[in-house]
Image 1 (cartoon, rainbow, N blue to C red):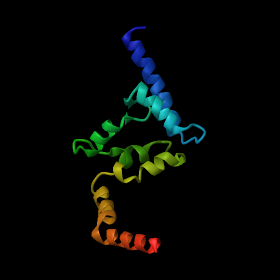
Image 2 (tube, rainbow, N blue to C red):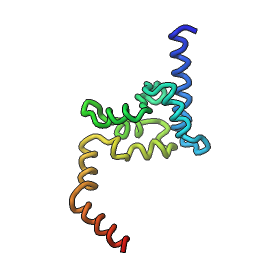
Image 3 (cartoon, rainbow, N blue to C red):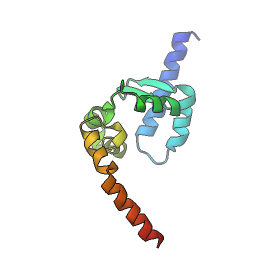
Image 4 (cartoon, one colour):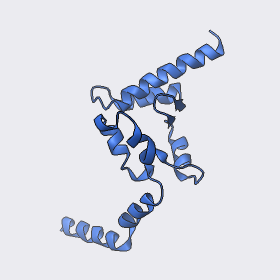
Length: 130
């Protein structure tokens, strides 16, 4: 098998694994599939989902910390995906803080990270401890 055919076969298998994970079907353990994807194609451009999928921790961390990358998934891809209405996964992704871009990200971050809120949580924790 030549290199192009091998790459095509790898891409087809990666798309199959992503489809299983994205389907939201609880009969398919997503961690097993994501582990398989990490071995097969840790950085994969998905034609079916219209975006890059990273499955290694260090790659994800680099993208999430770098200002060079925008997290368009929540703003654009998840909501505009034709499967959005029937996919609990896509609906939840659209509202996850790490997938938001400014100004929505900044507004939500301000709500969850202020000194007032931190003091409220510390007070609740002390009350629960007795």
